[in-house]
Length: 182
Image 1: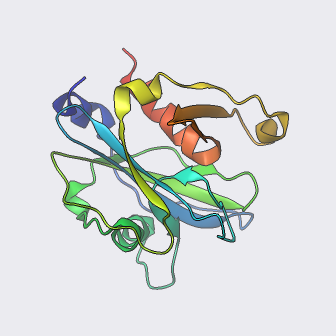
Image 2 (image 1 turned 180 degrees about the vertical axis):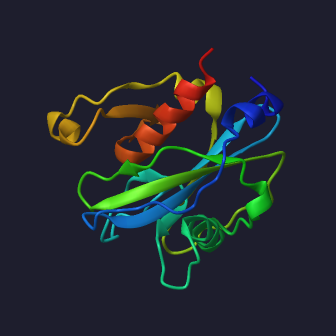
């Protein structure tokens, strides 16, 4: 699989507005895939964070009052968290919204497939930045064995360097995997 193969597959109309019934807080993430042999960027949250401490996730966060829409949220948070400036024109599509298990967020994932990225720099909301080869990473998918995780919808896990990616991030990865299967 090459980067050029991904662009048309992960391209979709972008609608950065979603309706919520008030049960969930709105948030968005940016799934950045780059490089000739596609690499996906993920981050590890610091262990002392209020929400999602120590979890592996995509750059992103909650809708801010200054954000015009959830796409602006994802772009702003990506810039703040890892120092990566992505323009609206570089966003190729979006995936289906996912909800978090414990923190009450409805997350709209956007996708950017780009040729290359500059050196990244983590802010205080990010412990580590991971550059993960996409194809082998997607092959690590398994059903989440923790029964308490399956109360909101199907749950999956992915593994990278002996760390487990689960929850909303895993469901986003599952959507990507489903789109890439022939």
